[in-house]
Length: 547
Ligand code: FAD
Image (spheres, rainbow, N blue to C red):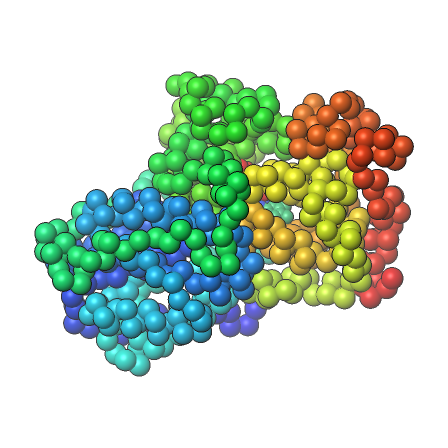
């Protein structure tokens, strides 16, 4: 692991935190961008327990921090999704007599003192939050602990919540962090539990409801409103509407999406109703077994033209549903026989293993923070020679490279704010190996356009595709986008849907139109030939620094 990563520093600080201060007038739960839910939420659960025990109000706080969103290339879609979910949560919390106070703060350097000043205003001496593993966020939390300790009044409790298995819990025999997925998975599996997490009970309705509502300060917090938008992150109204259709807000929606995946029949095409739930609801069956989406997941998860993945990533990235809840729900499937199925031979097992990738990349980020600071995990590739070509980069972003499967994937991202995993892999590999453009530019673009942008998974996916990461695709194993296209979109429906210029084409012509045909249809001709580009990439990776 990197020397002294900020997570270790935070854990050290938390051990030193002020103990048993006076109970104060309230307990505060600080909700973050990655835990937008009431259920199965460890920090909220701990905060609620303490508030009930001490018979004092529990207050929830959310701080919008535009400077952090700029620093992390957050997409306006993700910010809009956050606001929409906050509105739903505010209602759910109010039903439990917990007000959610939403404030906006800049500059981010003074955020620690801002939060402590809010606690001082409320005379609250206990602060609870779930840990965010990004470097800046960990440093911010260290700062809060230091300040709180200096002032000697506030006790900080920051807990691990994002992953199924806490970062740091699984280690190699030598006590190191894993950098290869398969052994990580083997070590991860024995920690899986099929029971509800005892540390994340649903918060109780707060006692003394009347006194909270009547309180001259706390009562007013119930009037706190979530802003329509964050300055600099306003969505165009068409886009806002489209996002609302594709990705509705709320914990109930996330549960429905999970149910749709586990219990409804897979469609052969992913292009029915634009609202996945509307479509899923029509197909609910008690036990569609192998015909369900998860039943088909093992064999069909790489098919971009089918609808066999869960589409839960926006909800998991924002913590609207927890990964623990997802794993637990699979245990109740008849095929799972009441235990977590991790077999490679079943749809359920394969899906649990995909959720494990999310844990893996988050553990990597926590242990090797340099990966998120623009450094390749494999330093030997730091000097690979990249092309600087604005025209090629822009064409890739716009889905106009002339390679149909790449363009369809990029246009899916543009339309839906989401992309199929295979589409992401093919588009990322094409940018980094065929166009030889720096993976960091692609990583940034995905964050800016996707609604599920998650720093750890996005960085992991990009460094995998660019062959610079932990357990990456070897640099000489370069996807041929045309053969990939035939494999992942055998019906061609995906390309035809997102690239209407090609809607009349079938078979090979669709996957790899000739320059003459492309020109006739008003579709671009590729900038590079794949075989030549492949040779160039291998040469440059073999000897970093060479042309
Ligand atoms: P499912 O197949 O149903 O999987 C269930 C869940 O498991 C996903 O929702 C996700 O949380 C997790 N998961 C599955 N595959 C992976 C994976 N390879 N890495 C990490 N987690 C995984 N995922 C994000 O959530 N946010 C990102 O910003 C992101 N960027 C990516 C960038 C690149 C270049 C690549 C190759 C992958 C990226 N992924 C990212 C991972 C993956 O593509 C998406 O999680 C997946 O496509 C989401 O669709 P789904 O919910 O239907 O997945």
